[in-house]
Image (cartoon, rainbow, N blue to C red; front, side):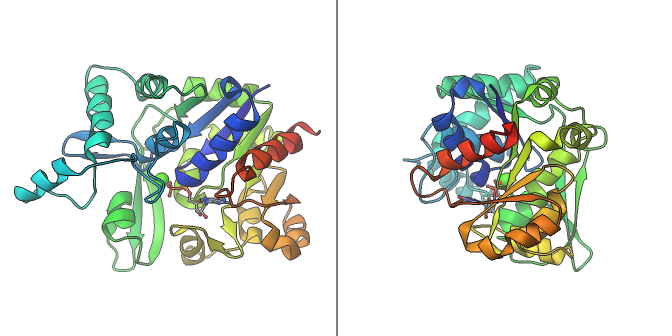
Length: 311
Ligand code: GDP
Ligand code: CA
């Protein structure tokens, strides 16, 4: 038995928590987005990998939804003293992770190797695999013809500006992680997590070969809609879909994912759109998908696994 999840940050981390509750954690693998990664103050920061790691370790800050619990911010305050760039907050505890990752990468370790070391140190029994060991970078186009980095858009501008396009620089040259290829090829069930379809799942599919690998096993793939009642729970997924000419609804999600997965899990609030999802080419499953309530994520993971394996 093996359960592989295409993962971004928060939505994926919650889903993975359910998967390790429902199944033997050793059988669960997340293939994680790295296009949000950013070098700050010389440090390699991997927001989606860290969100997944900290969440699975039970160490995520529950209020912020990112970073570590019981965090302090003294390093940032000192950075501010010097007029250093402090628009992207890195907590004192969190900085330890980035220091370790950066030093290991500098020593020649791959991101896959460093991630395995970090997740092991947090006691995770499941695997998190960066989709590639190469650098990919999400670039966001704005209406004034400027193009900015993803974190500048997401954190710096708090995603409050209209987007005209998204590009993943480096993706064409990036090589899929061999471990990820092996995990996906051998997976009994593959799940596209409820992550931002454009900037979390999009860059995964932009790595040459991944889309074909996923499409070839479509019948055993399930997607969970990150759009509920036409809106994202958090973040800009709904606006981004509309700004890029798609529909911010489970039907829009189905149109985007229909070649990748046979089944789409939609929330109960979208029940009346189930037949439209079917018309768009995906088999709908209607169930609770808001994973803040205990038990929802595990039930979701079980339903996805059953659908993917034809139970
Ligand atoms: P980020 O990288 O941290 O921005 O997070 P992701 O790309 O993984 O997730 C952002 C998307 O996840 C948003 O569109 C949310 O609506 C969705 N999301 C977050 N939590 C949940 C949840 O509990 N259920 C569902 N269905 N979607 C969620
Ligand atoms: Ca992210």
